[in-house]
Image (cartoon, one colour):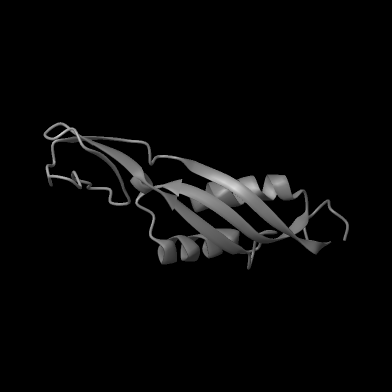
Length: 116
């Protein structure tokens, strides 16, 4: 996931240095913040996104209960009904992965083919 994000960010950067990015990811991806940051740092090493700060925004999934008819949102991949506790639920949403924004530095990065 992080390698794909770094590649996409690099394409958008067009040689500019990246100082930060905001990524919206759904709960179903089961992303853990610290692990994501470490994986991103490894994937970004040697690219214009190296040392960039990444803001991770986790979006909930929707839980619809067959037992009581309740609906709620959850940040738990293994969600149950918040009203009655039933596991007889349908879940939807929470599967997005969106690069929301990129912050650029003032100078250009050391990228072959892009003069400083």
